[in-house]
Length: 158
Image (cartoon, rainbow, N blue to C red; front, side, top):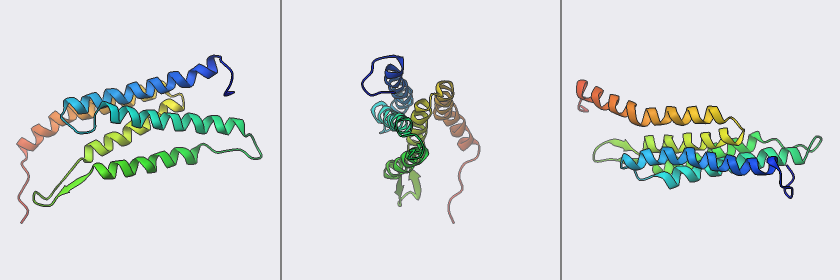
């Protein structure tokens, strides 16, 4: 893709960014409805940023062919590591209750980044299915987990 031409290959990254942001936003809307702090803006920005960095890494790799080729994989692995820092900031340990909170939100942010990367690599159906699965886990699995907690209450720490 030439950075100065206007054709389908130039428009495609813009469509990819919109798709990634939209899928991230869907996850964030569910989190907002569930009363969580990270909502549509956070999830959309994570998916958007991951997609953008993936698109850039792929295009830089094509601009600099062998023997000075650029490998896009390290850039993607850096996205995953960077999202880990955001996730770590979301996880809180409450000493008085001896419990973790924010773990599911952190995992959701990580999945949102993975969805953005997937869109960046043009795997649109896979990204849509991953979004569906994440929404299923956020909603249906949450309800199932609540029912299981009633059936099998936690034992007190001795």
